[in-house]
Length: 397
Image 1: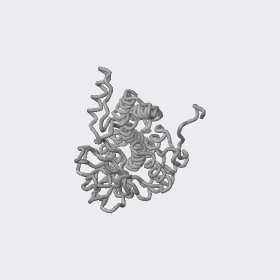
Image 2 (image 1 turned 60 degrees about the vertical axis):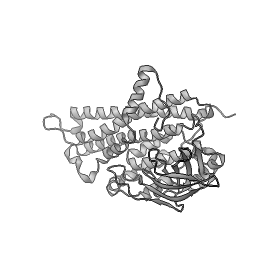
Image 3 (image 1 turned 180 degrees about the vertical axis):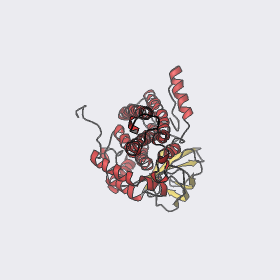
Image 4 (image 1 turned 90 degrees about the vertical axis):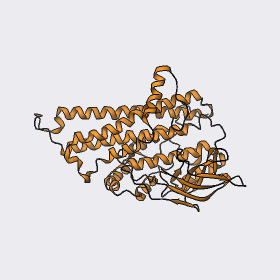
């Protein structure tokens, strides 16, 4: 029997390798934010750092990292580049989709294939976009036609997950297909104010074949509590993006003020770093960032515990994880927006120079914090605080 004190998972990248990656990404982040487009070179660096298989279990040759370690890595990358942190997070999400929805043969094929082929994964799974329609074929497969929007990571990927509406059942089907399959067109039409390199454009499908062995999950089957953890994996990706953005904005503000800051003319001090109101501002920003990080860590640990329960996970235990995730996401959402805005109050007018691109933190946060309404999460937390009612399973909780 294994020693129960031995970790179930391991980290896949050394701190020095991760630091080298962060330095390289930060050097190009401002220019890439201005240019938009596809970050092929930077994605190659992420692959070379061994991060593509963080969420692949060890039995298939992957890192099998703890969720706490995966989210720390996503947070670290988000401090310098929210878009690429998003791509790594959604890489992990697609692998989890295979893990919880796939059968043994599919897990072997796709998870080990990711390790052997160093595959990047994209997705066309947006649950609120019903335009992609699946028609059953006589060989138990499907033919899919239509369009999906917000298909993060699909450009430049080798594999992708797909959801399509099956009119015969009124429910979605989920599948895996190669991104280059005939009939699939990945459009370069992503042009937001932030998160400009997440490759989140639309994908068109024209009578695309999906074979029976590629169908991951027929949604007429009731999902297990563990299978519904996929939603919480997704929500914690976004949560840790927000935390990383807040931390990155604080880091850039500190760097700018220590190098270029000036005290206000009536402050009575010689250095900006001694200005009492500057100290107060940085104190407030740090409090928001560390509070968000603490709740994100707490939620990730709860997810780790639930994940390790496997088939024994109960609906009640899963609901407590959902509550912790919502609490963390609310605080992280607010921290990302507030710290990235307060950066400019701390740094002053000269920090608005376009070449510095310090506004990218706020723009990245603003784009991603619109993913789903904050008010409904606050409602769920308030309902629990008042009556003890736990969140129900949904597309976002």
